[in-house]
Length: 345
Image (cartoon, rainbow, N blue to C red):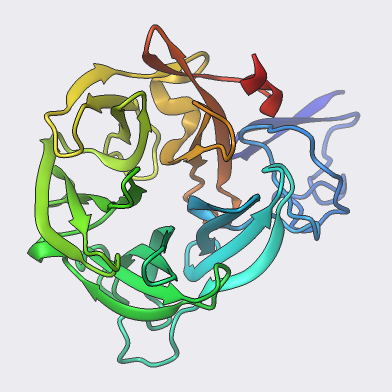
């Protein structure tokens, strides 16, 4: 008799066929969780949603990420996660975007129980930008205080002289008194930096210009739209700004949308869902977190999303897909695998 045992992963369903009835996962030698360490093989392509290991053979643990380019090196900052807990901000480096070296814990939680970032707080969606005037690397994070659930809704700022850290905590606050949850940072061509964030229980999406040192918000702070959106990812292409967001459905995926504007403070025009292919109406199972402009390549951008696994956040996967423009319409098409040669077309 043939029995099929089904194990569910965040990315799909793995079917394992047993030749005889009564076999269990244990005596078939099958693990219910992905291996946390393997012998590393050099990657030459992106495989969205699949397990992604660093150069030491460990699973990359950097969710809600942002990427900073310094010279010819990319630095990937993301949430360090356990099954549910938050453990600070990890950082990885890469020359080719496929193979990532673990550089360490860029921002650690504090052991001081009086600190806003004490152990047990929640740090989400870290983003790092470089300030040419102060020569500091500046990190912003969505911060929730220990034991407060999602009630605090604060922005947190930390700085470092070195891109990989360690970053030193500066402050946490509500920008101009506004709640601040899902967020992103954007540096425009003139060096001005902006904080894009969900506010008012996620009913508002706001944008605020940062101070010259990037350490706080200025009063140039405006509602982009009131539509209950989160997970903002922003880019500039041909003198227009494109903003991708998701709906607010907890950890569950939903339909993405794109807004376009000639000015960061608007008006912003909704142009629809950019996703194309199987699972497009659910953002391929993911949620936007960042848009990466490729260094040295004109009009080349990668859409980055998280495929959340709320039962084991550490096992949340990464979706990286090329952004295409067809008749100036932003499109993101599903691909099982692809490489950077895509941008040579």
